[in-house]
Length: 140
Length: 365
Image 1 (cartoon, rainbow over the protein chains, first blue to last red):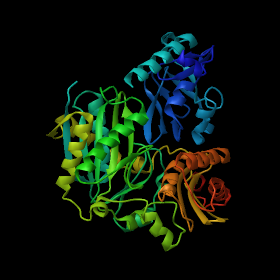
Image 2 (image 1 turned 45 degrees about the vertical axis):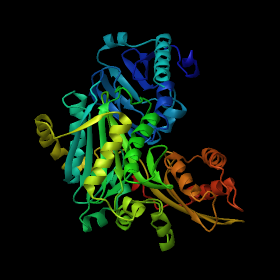
Image 3 (image 1 turned 30 degrees about the horizontal axis):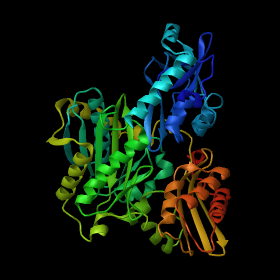
Image 4 (image 1 turned 180 degrees about the horizontal axis):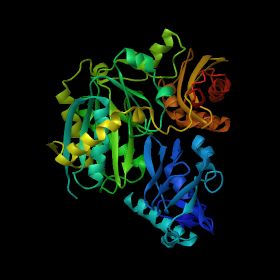
C-alpha cells in the first residue's frame, strides 16, 4: 500500500481535499494531512480566515502558495472560526514539518454536524490516497 | 476532448484591467462558459506586480514608481515581484486540471507548459530550456518566469517573456537583493536575465513573436488555436470586477500575512577568492526569498553560480538545510571552483543570514 509512507493517524476524520479533522463535541480542529503537505511541497504562504468568519462546507476558507502556485483551501465542514493558528500563518513550513501537531490551521464550531458523515475514517482515507497515487502513476 | 482552444489577444492594457481579466477568464472557464484559452498579456503603462500573497510595501519602491508613472498591482497568481515594461509579452493558459495530456502533478505541468513556450522560442531561433522549478532560461540567464493559480478544477498558468527589457528601471522599481552593491555588482546582476533582442541581436516584430509562441504551444499541447474575443459574459463580469482590482484594498492587500523581505549582505574570504552574498530573507518563515552571489573566484561550469541562486530561491534558511542544499548542488552540477569548497558558500550564506538586515519586514509596516 503506497499510502503507508504517509502518516494517517487513527481517531481523525479526513476529506478528499486532504484535510484532517479532529472532532471534539461541537468543535473541530482542522489541518492538512501528511499526504496533502507532501503533494503541495514547501509551503511559502498561508492565508487563513480569521476568527468569527463563517463558511459553508466546500467554500474557500483560505489560500496556500508553494512553487509560485496559489491554491484555495476548501472548508471540509460548515462552521464558524473560533481560532486561527497565527503561528503557522507566520511560518507555514510548520505544516510541512508537523502536519498533525504545530501545523494545525483552524479550530471551528460546527454549524451542521450532519456533515461529519460525509468524511472518511483513517482506513477509508488510506484507500483513497492509494487510489490517487495509482492514478498519478498511470498518467505517467 | 475538444482540441480547439481560443486564442485571445486583448492588446496592451493597464495593470488593473489585466489583473481583472485574469480573474474573469478563469472564472468563466471554471464555470464552463468559455473554451480553453491562450491569452497574450501586454501592459501599458509600465507596471510592477506583486505575487498574490506578497506585501507591496516590502517588495516595491513605491516612491520611485509614483515618480516614474509605474502602476502597481497584485496578481491572482503566486510568485515574486515583477517589473513589466511596455515591450514585454506575457502568455497565459486557462484549462481544467483534468485536461488530457496535461499532468496533474505541478512540477510535471510546469515542465510541459514551459516546454511549449521553449518550442515557440525555437521557431524564433532561440535555444531556450526549462529550468526547474518554473523558469525558462537561455544559457543560464532567465528569459521567462512563470506562476499559476486555480479556481475549482480550472487553472491559470502564466509567464513573462522578456523581449527588449529595461533592467535599470526594474532594479530601481523593485526591492531586490542588490540595493547596497556597487556598480560592478549591478552589472553582474543584469547578467542574470536576458531578453530576445540581446539573444538575436535584433527584436522581431511583436506579431512574429506572438505567432511563434502560438505555434509552439499548439505543437507541444497538441491543440488548435482559433483567434477569438471576449464573450459578452466575460465583458459584463470584467466591468463588475474592474473597480475591485483598481482599489487600494486589492493592491495593498486587505489581509497580507506577516512576512519580511529583509536585505542581508556578507562577505567571506576563501583561498580561491572573495565570496559576496546578498540575500532577501524572511527569517520567521525560514525562507531565502532570493540570493545574489558574486566574487572574484572562477567557477566551472561558468553558469554554476546562477544555477545555485535559482536553487536557493524560496529555499529553507535553516543552517542544516542550507548546508545540504549547497553540498548537493555541488555534487549534482559537478561544480569546480579552484580554492573554494561547497562549505565556503554555506559559510557565506550563513554569515549573511546572521547579519543585521534593513528591517524591511511586516513589523515596520
